[in-house]
Length: 278
Ligand SMILES: Cc1cc2nc3c(=O)[nH]c(=O)nc-3n(C[C@H](O)[C@H](O)[C@H](O)COP(=O)(O)OP(=O)(O)OC[C@H]3O[C@@H](n4cnc5c(N)ncnc54)[C@H](O)[C@@H]3O)c2cc1C
Image 1 (cartoon, rainbow, N blue to C red):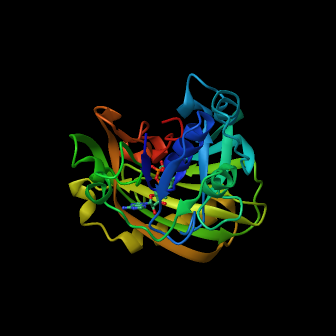
Image 2: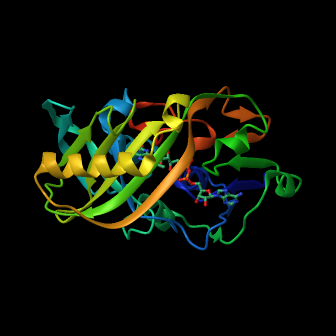
């Protein structure tokens, strides 16, 4: 058996680790120069997205021998609407880092890997499929999957995000639902530490949202976040993403070609999250 994995993100690396556990060594191709070579962001592993497993970290550790160290556990989620504030508390899940952060999940996975990753290799399925008996598509891009099978797009989303500096309680997460700046979407704050957090505005690219002034939405959103949390946050870096596809495909395998992670499709629409268990 000769196995290729295209993409060394969360799903490609998890797949490679699982194969190693069963005694198979895959060739992993990554187009970037290193694992996690992109902007820093905090993500959330909400327990409700991983049902029936209420603790995804424990599940991955005990069932798949994949060990992840989250940044912290989430004990409270604040929910702000235009006029109301509410919250839920309990053991709600974890936050974790991605991208260039030293504790990014993709770096943690790469450290557990015995085999090597071939970096700066932007490969196409067509180029490598003749050399391998099995190919795993883990590029994080469902457009690659679309070449093989239909993809049900629930919607495309626009993201604008930033790293902000302020005072945070790491165990508390803030969400904002407000049509004036997040039309049919939301904004959220996920702390990285007690001094730094990811601030993200995400909304679907429905036709009625296309004509909106995105910079204006962002300004309003940041202003509301500062007002609600009663702080003057300093923005240290920004990014934006367009056409992020949310939806799913029909089958995770066609012949000896496998689709994992985003190539398999996102399972939850809320916060566009919940992909780790695929
Ligand atoms: C702003 C934002 C916030 C998010 N927040 C959350 C969250 O809070 N919780 C959550 O569960 N999920 C969240 N997600 C979703 C989560 O990031 C994805 O579900 C997850 O990264 C998918 O993993 P993946 O392995 O499929 O793709 P990725 O992690 O994107 O990895 C794909 C890898 O493939 C490489 N690659 C691509 N094409 C090629 C090629 N042709 N050749 C070689 N290498 C290639 C890329 O460089 C990359 O390293 C968020 C996504 C975004 C954009």
